[in-house]
Length: 208
Image (cartoon, rainbow, N blue to C red; front, side):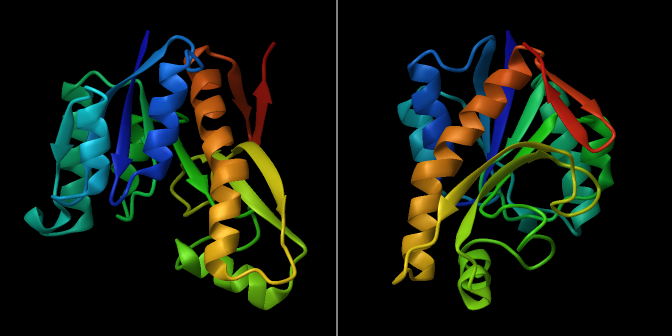
């Protein structure tokens, strides 16, 4: 049984999708063992507590820089004997120490079809604002392994979601969460926990 840590910064809607999937038995051979928040009072911690999952606060402001924070986070994950790290709305920039400690074992969900609308500065509603400004007819979500390059790791799963005529960034964000993010992330986590993901270069093969 693989131990999963979910890293959060805010409300934890993707965390809730994982908790619900776990409750339905959809995360095979894996269990959420810890939720780590980058700031105290994050609502995601309440979701974890309700589900009986240990929650921890590692506030970014308690460390002098990103590297010191990343090293402390890596050490905490190792202490907890974590196998898979999931970034679910985690708004802190991490340095290479975490990727080196967990190669192809950190998953992130991004609310667009990478390589569109991704990279530095593309987070939260900004992604959907840019997609609508560009006039795309479809957007969607991507689950990818985390590499040293922001949003640049190998893609595990993607799902397209139509852009509607009168969409606002908020309505598009909600549709992508409901139709793509909340489905893709639990599936990717389950595939990892079943050892069904094999990475070759930039390609992730899903094994039967």
